[in-house]
Length: 374
Image (cartoon, rainbow, N blue to C red; front, side):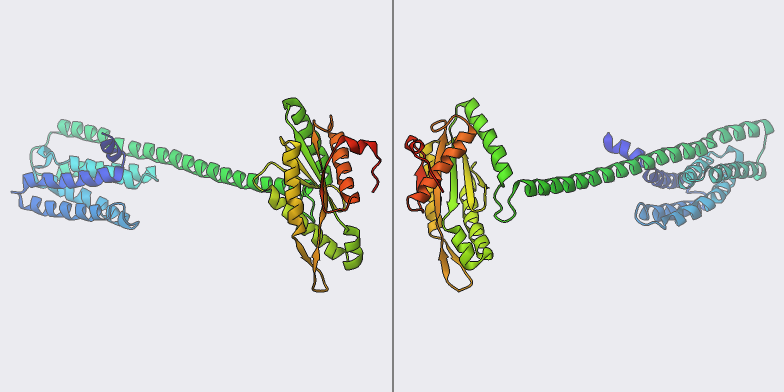
């Protein structure tokens, strides 16, 4: 059923098929020599229209030529078939339907063509041989005109329908374009926002989270740990002999040392919830949520050993050995709030530096009994 409805609403296909059917109907009158020529004319023009169907833009020239020739051919057919008694006038309807379809963009041309066909039909009936009664002639012409005027009306309605469809199509295209533009703008805004966020929370030299982010995040993580009864471990890292590196080789080498160690810290944190930060000149930190002291210590010790294996090139073509001192503290084992956690991890780090550097130290209560100095 659906293909049939689709066919009936495709007016060009419907008219082409109707014309082919009308051409075949002329076989009923094939005994008449002129009808043979009329059949050949309809068959040839129908074939030409069918071949050009929905294929090339210039096919409408064939339609226009056919529409102009059809009324003359139909008039001769009616005369040859008996004039007033002939029923072949319905071929005019096919021609007017084709004209209404091709001239749907101009209702005045369609109306003029319909009136011209009515006048031609009237002249054909008057000039055809046979007995003619004026009352019957008038009735036939009124009925013919009443039916034929439907075609310009159809043309106008179809034209309005297509205008509405075109406006809807353009509105839909404009909506789609606006949607795509908005999506593009949203992506750009998201990228710009993300870029600003990265610049706001990342240290530009090391690509670690910066000092401000560290202090905001440690408060949040400590509060989460407190509410959910989960542990939180903090690791504070200080690069050994960093001032001496800057004084001896220059700040560019110092920056390279920082970048190299920070890169290794970032690599250690990939695929985890660990949060690496730079909290001072040569001080780094690692926030490790939901981790006990011993597990945090193992992570810190692994990082210290990896740094110990690093070699940083210097301008004298030698490779510089680097190391870090690491302090580890855990909440709630060693403290009751975020500030105490920072202080005690810092204390443990200073103990590591004071007792020989290049080592990892856990915080313990004994550290409170002595004052740790830099």
